Length: 301
Image (tube, rainbow, N blue to C red):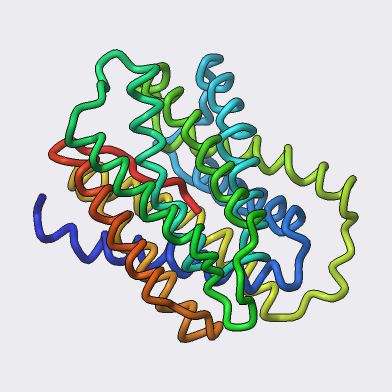
């Protein structure tokens, strides 16, 4: 990997890491479902603008792309994103980021079961055990990352776990059926479908009263939509295209560190020795899982 990729990797990690912290500000004023629905629709509008003003990109017409991307939009975007944002009402952005980072462990297990060319070996198995052990340490210690919450909520942990499970299903589908499709087109369709799925459900279940939202809430929503989702995704495409997927995978090590540090400095979240221990175990596990082969290591928060 060329060292010129490092500034881009750092910037992407900064975007996704701060995005989790910013979203925690947002869910303090928005209902999580409403926040996710608006965020997804705004992000999809940004992709529509790119299709409109760019003469090099045309709206995809492939029926299989739309079918698979629609599945991803519902199962691997709408559901996990709602779960991740909802988890921020129970725990810190740092704890959520650490648990998200274990995604490669679950993907490795699923790949062994469903992808013939992705068999488990001793190195990967050790990596899976280390990563899951790090997550277990955080959960069993009841870490919340919040100064006024002594014991973390199983609901918060469960929401992140469910998000990772649904994202894993999407990852397997991408590897089996969608390698030939444009990543840009797939992302545009899946975000649009996700937004059109979440927003009606949010209005039906929660209503659409935004009268209590302040300026900081709106800023967090705009940041999450246009920086944390659209701009970060565009940068991810650029990194993968210019420097390869190995460079892109390094963002998985940056995101939890950024989320934890910014959460402490901005929202007065806490970092304990047990969280640091969990981070070391998870990071070591992911390093073993990734090995010499590149892969997308975590969901887009």
